[in-house]
Length: 124
Figure 1 (cartoon, rainbow, N blue to C red):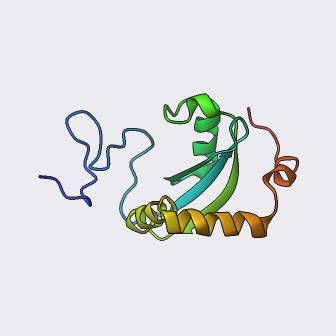
Figure 2: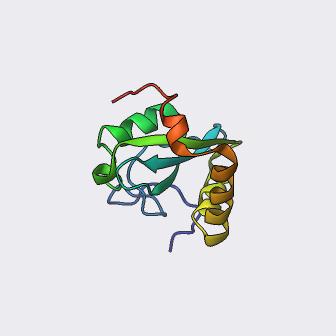
């Protein structure tokens, strides 16, 4: 059996977390956990990437199956992590009930998404 820390692709091209998309990152490379907000349904999406701007573009162009029907997205939060492992831990936390409450509080402190949307240039 594979451990949850094994990130090698399986026979079907998925890692131990069931992920198939995105670029593979070396363990020591700086990673980012990001939070997107869908302008279509208002829901949040939490992910991680080495290049947040590139990943946001992939989401908005419909290249990510899990978010394709919910575009467009705006970037709400981007948090730098020291490596892939730290990013996975943070992403998992943000997807938990306690993490969602933390994100709710952060978004309240940052202000309404609509105000930030007007300040972001469109990349669609």
